[in-house]
Length: 322
Image (cartoon, rainbow, N blue to C red; front, side):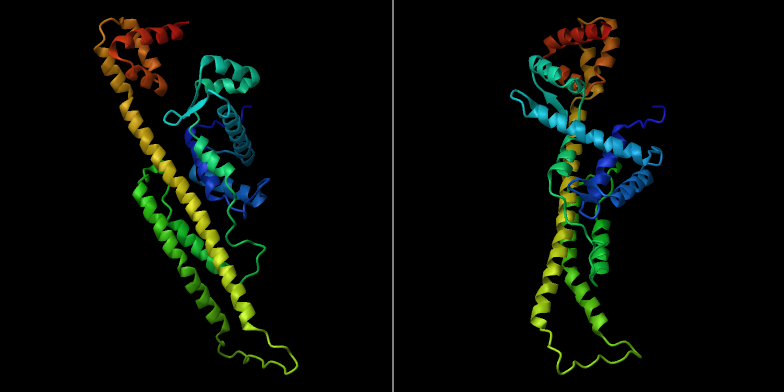
């Protein structure tokens, strides 16, 4: 237990981002991540978060725990009288229904007062089909390297971490448009490679003549197969990029909404409202800071009309003292 990893929200969001980035059939199967996938996930995570110092086992265990938490919350949300508060990222229901939920699933107790902002990201990761991998290692095709190169070019267009401030939705939309345009270059690159392969090299033996008794290979049969492979591979790249960028755009919208909500229900606004209340003791004013640390409490406090704020705040302070 002394070596147990301490997972804060920054690390959890970082792990989910990396899982999305590597979510394709090259690294993941319907039964779980491949060994090669885990190696890349662990490397990517520790490269981006060197201060975490998590081992492979710790990262795998937390990925498993996040899936369990996701399934638990989804099962709760299927009950009548239960809803999901998108702004607060919390389950909303009555105390009576919560008692029933906790009786059936004691582990659900923590989510009675705890948010789970990863629900939407995990839903996109766990509920959608796994995109086809780009440049599958088992595939013998002369154009594999070309497609991998194209994939890297498209990946380079993807904005960095939303937490680093690159959360502009219009920039993400431009990225998606550029990615789609880039896919049109796949055929040109592939045709160039094929021409280079077919072109005689200096000093090379001339192309051997076909024997008279050897049946001619129909080009009409070969070309449609090549075209089909090209279209399928380009479609796989586009599917992966669009799914990832769609996830990023939703993440950006969520962060912008969270930022707006944070400004609307900030601690400073609560303190300012508290200063105008004359029927509150100094003890309540001091302890109110602990109440306002919770974003849901701040929203409730500011949503009440002024005459009811004091009653609600005194009740919450008494709960802290119990």
